[in-house]
Length: 343
Image (cartoon, rainbow, N blue to C red; front, side):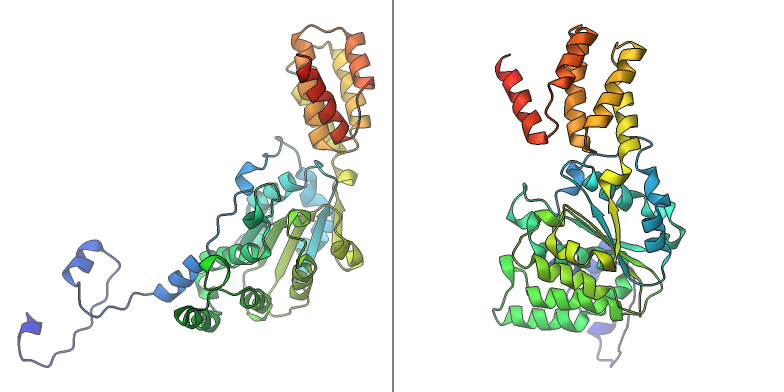
């Protein structure tokens, strides 16, 4: 009613977002709290598909991580630092990375209120899932989602938005340019915050080779920062850029630590069969000895053995099968396909 009168009255109303109030005040000047950060947040969103497809850890496995000397040193340090998980194909790197991301805040006191940003590269799932540009977007999106006060790159966002309005767009129509995303990520170390930031990045070896060296160098450059603590957790097959700097950070090699997990997994997997105890022990020992610390190889062999158990194969037949196995994954896949073709 005040608006209909000739009084010079200025009215300021504040409220939480509610649909009925928005309807009543439709058409009036409105300032929505945090709208700019939310707009920026939406421009950084990218659906990283690999994480949901990674196998969950076998119950009771991977507990060694929290007590590993390299991990404890990396975690306890009050400085920014990189931890490198290196291993063969199929050795469990991605499962370990997922396990670490899912359990970090429950297992580490230092990480109770930490910001955890992650990206899981995947060559098999197409160009967008191995793209460094989308990795940077995803990492920054996770950080901004978990801490709204981290919008220190407001000016950079405004510049990108102005360029968009002038017709300048990044890849796939996104307003961010690749160089700007790298600069924003690098600036994280200059922003004094109490919470730790954990960057969890899996399968660097599956990322685009183009610019991979520069992105790895960018992660290295985060580490000397003094204003905040940024912990970088990277998993990969051996990559030249990482291997060249191996003396500068902590390293855990999967083939050095996963024998007990492989033994436990094998025994549990095969304990559902009708193999006699002595046969089960022999099979488990044989598999662990010849697995070369590769979980995927173990899983494929156990699948075959469970089928043999259902068919009532004798111990001698099983021993013959085990001794005929190729220990390389490629050879084992070929053997399984040949068996399938023979029916």
